[in-house]
Length: 103
Image (cartoon, rainbow, N blue to C red; front, side, top):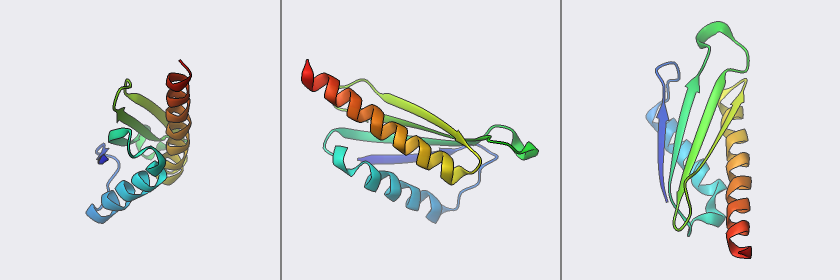
């Protein structure tokens, strides 16, 4: 599984942080490792310094034999946005796989 971490110019990540995030995504989605070919993470700060729940994490999973699955989560912090997006992606992948297997 290939993990790619992207961010806008308002979110700064150190090189080791991007690697740590890649490992986090890989660990969280390990049960789907045989089906996922690539995951792209896009981090952003929608309001700049204005505050509010403006941190965004968009995850897109490319899977073999399925259409890409994308989810987005907004939160107060980047870490909360990532955690929420991972939960949503886990649910969406489980749903897509379950739906495919029942048909």
